[in-house]
Length: 489
Image 1 (tube, rainbow, N blue to C red):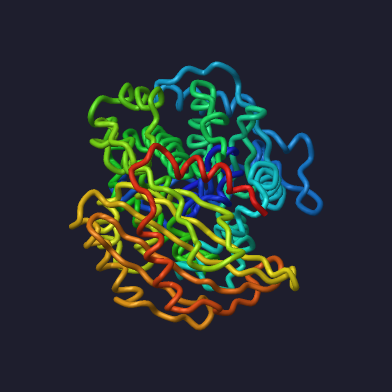
Image 2 (image 1 turned 90 degrees about the vertical axis):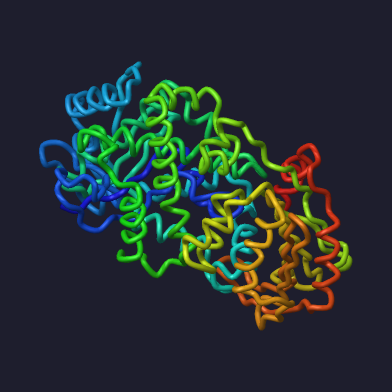
């Protein structure tokens, strides 16, 4: 039987586009379909819930005419919903406050709803600026059409979503009965979460707040995975966390969208796998009561999510000021800044080295902030110059040195001049690491555009020194600036 990891709350779906590095993982997106899993009796091999689609309507009803569903086919039966909801509520220990409505839609209709969420909730320009972060760090090709690639990935993987705004599950129309049961179990956990904890409010997108959002999203998904496995296999503790992680990674790699850049694939699965490990750790410590306690005091960083002992200690992130760019000359201004956090740093490093090395290098994260800077061409509106500065503070000098070795493995010891993306240079001093990339010019609207280098290593060296002089340890300077500049177009 093929099982798949499916999607979460609709609010998360709307934010999936803005996840990635710096805006944290693809918040709310559906991870990829998993390869065939063993029978439930062999739960240690980690059976997975449905992902690329959602339940068929009851009674064999299906889509009609060009992907449209008639009204009778557009709902699951109330009895089926109530039956699964009761099982999920008992397994999770959350009350049912109201019924959960459902709609079954064609895949294209589901994707259009996701697009509508993104356009409504994400400020203009944010996706473009996140593309520059990924391109500058060589995490996606310089000319990669980031937005189109993201939606292609979603369309191939999405199962549906629960929408807090109208307390309705929107489900894709092409699952088998077995996959439908698994998807329902997962989605109905989200419905119960919303009824008890108000998911829409907790997952609201805020500029400069992506690491916190990623931590919350992983809790949402990890809890849904854990409760779902309790329903499907008797106990989530029969599921091997390492095997689950491998199956989630394999699922996209072996799918029709397996050519998607690794960083996007990893971002898609991280909320599920990291969140599951987090919730399981909480449950081992104190059962579902420990999970309930976290809902009352959410993790503030993905570092706290990845290291429950740091959540218990409420270890805060070090505030890092927004990098400046005076060394680049007049006209350059910060148009977007954010915090990557440990989870996103781990995902980025995994594109440069083996996963174990990436985890080790990211584990010393203490705080960070990056800035995308831009200069517009007054004579050619289609041409803009971009550059990236990233300042990180690690817990110790040895932690910074470990991260530095991984960065050196990818980019070398000294500034490297790149044909399309311009220079990239980095340095480490004590517990601090800084990276600068660019400037480079991008011409053409939409998609990836034509990219060409304009910066030099001489200027990059001056800029690197400027970034290393920036403030670290202040009272939230970066977050305040992020809210102010992130909306520039």
